[in-house]
Length: 173
Image (cartoon, rainbow, N blue to C red; front, side):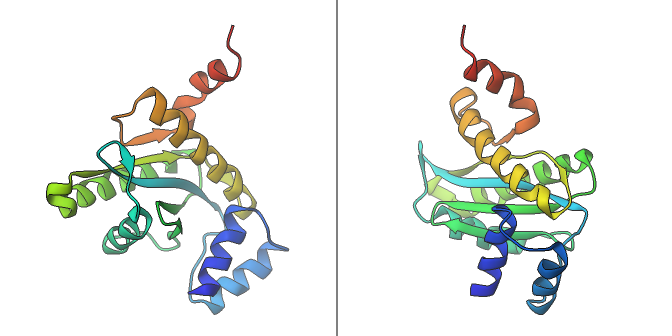
């Protein structure tokens, strides 16, 4: 488990030597990784108007129960946050990550029952190769923050759809 977490953090922070070295580590951990790249999704469980305290682990359990493509990786990076890396070959694959988030939401709502929890997620863009993961992760973090303010009731916030609002927010007149 420690090896998987270390590998995951190396991917999202672009903190690794060579892609080959990373592929070897992943192989040793029986964790196939897609060399073409990934789209990152940062997911939080929202209970009422607040992030669920153990939402990251809860969402990790839900994600583990869903059919994921080969090479998909997920990890609770902190108690409230689940990060999913969706294998991708192009920008068109961002939609696959969005659909996974919607499945996660549906299942989380069903499992939470009376607690009425829901999912909020930010989805980054596609950047080729394993080096692109950190950029997608950063975009996903931006998207969940901006999306929370602009459309608090929405489930999935795609970075590419929020760019115009991000630009406006950073350059107020």
